[in-house]
Length: 107
Length: 121
Image (cartoon, rainbow over all chains, first blue to last red; front, side):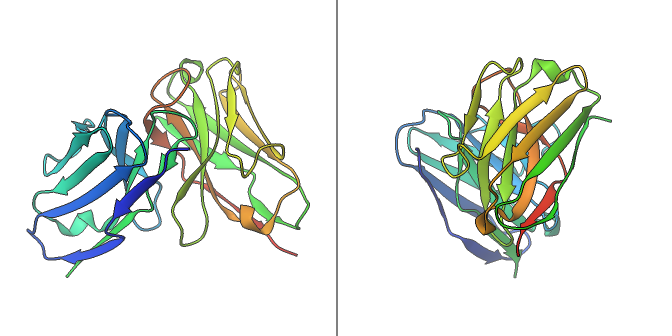
């Protein structure tokens, strides 16, 4: 199985700050990497697929980058509604595997 | 409205069984593979099982293999998860989720609200 290591596990930042989350795969997954946002008490929501493609309707302050084993997810200007836990997920092969999550809070 | 609605969760004793259902609406259900993902209380996301558009391919996490069975009824736009020999560690919120393609793996672009399964004496 492909292991996904996500860091940090939590962070606290101010409104307007740039926030970056990293995700590392245990083997080369090319760009088969998605990012999800899970707001408190809600189901996950797909934000970015194929490492960098923003889903329709997702604000442009969200972005993703990377290929191979190393990926980043960035919020360019943190907003109060971005409080959530963010997960990376690989789909190079089954089983689908998720990173451990990054809880983002407002300072 | 495009949506997935899970049902069938509840409290069950260890060793018991439950059948989860997921009703799909407002999209062509049989064009897409479907998956189950669970989330234990306060924990992260764990993939459980997936099924291709025509039920020809199924896959399971090692943690549930031999105990859970995924199925679908395309005529009823419904996905199922039969869970047998339940254990305390199966306690979780179970989400059904739609894949963006008909089979295999990929992004999960539509999720239900989840149904809670609690395994306890």
